Image (cartoon, rainbow, N blue to C red; front, side, top):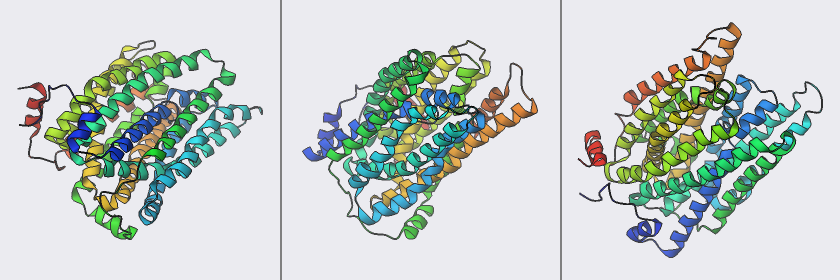
Amino acid sequence: MGMKLGRRPGGFSELYAEAQLSAPVRRGLNWILGGNLFGTLFGIICNGGTAAMVGLAGLMGAGDMEFGLLVAIPQIAALMQIPFALLVNRTHKRKLYMLTIGLFSRALWMLFGFLPLLSRVPESQLPLLALIILLALSSVLGSVINVCWFPWFSDLAPLRIRGRWLSLRDTITAVGSLLFGLLVAYLLDVLPVSSKYIIIFLIGGGLGVLDMVCFAFAPESWTAKPKKTPMHKTMLEALRNKPFMRLTVMWTAWNFTANLSGSFLTPYAMNSMGLNFMQITIFGTVAASVATVLAVPRWGRTLDRFGSKNVMMIGCIGASLTPAFYLLSTPGSIWPTLLHNVIGALFWSASNLAANSMQLSASPDESRPTYIALFSCITALAGVALGTLCGGWFLEWCDGAGLFTGFFDRYKVLILISVVLRFGFTLLLVPPMSNENECTLRDTLRGMTGR
């Protein structure tokens, strides 16, 4: 029957030995691991919905709609992945683009903390406008990163060990997120306002640069000999690829419903529930990291044995329900944030792992950059960006109309809508997807429980 799920997971060396990887490939995967770790730490500070960005945007007077725009801009910029994928397919110089365009996009984040210095003029919108422009520029240039590193990893890591490699990586990055998240929260709480964001974003941008530098030491490898296939032919091929399109439609709907309310949970916890930076971090980032460390190795073994579809189904069902904890929140309450992040991370780690694995499995080796770019563009634009903008519009509309001002406020209404839609889309869109083997959902549940 193969590997038992109760077995303690082996390390990277064991996986490399199982796959009989050469020494250069092993070193390359280890450098990619280092880059992923630095990139995860970079994302704790430098992302649209982080505590640092919420604080910086609030300092500049951003409302719900402006905040929604800040979250949506990186997703809209994902459209640039298509021309970048065309560039990668034609030139096959992934390392060059990571170390030039990608590195510059990360370095720009070092400037974000200086933007409040532009607010010398009373009632000036210059800092917020500069924040939007700088974020857009960094996001557009950063679009090259995804179409380079993910196919690169896929070419180095054989299919049979990808699930376990990604789960081990997620365990390491979760531990790093836990420790680094505490440090960032402490700095946000104790540093003076005049300097905190300068220091925080210098650190974040520096970590992003280190992420790119790691790829300088990874060998470029190609599973299939690169072919200069015309972009339009590859895109038509992708649109006719049923497993790929089913995954794309499902993940787009999932991201839309998730970001409809998910992008506003941190501002809600800080502004309406009254949590400070340290509380947001401990009961958010840290709690989720601990849960991920405990859960993701098991999900990786489950995925390699029973297939991605079954893991996706279990993960999406659980993750779709966890925001409902916020429906019972009150000012000063901590437990909704804690339960949402702990229980949610147990299932988010499964759905994210399954999505990564299915994306690689559904895209051919020779045209993977284009497939990944198309997938990212659709899910980012129609999923994350549109969901966030719709959520921001709904909150602004309710506020202007004076609706839902009591205990069941406008945020809770939005959360309820999001939960219902996510659960419904999961039941509707996951079952038609393909799986790597013939195992049923019942087989998967039995294997996980040891029955």
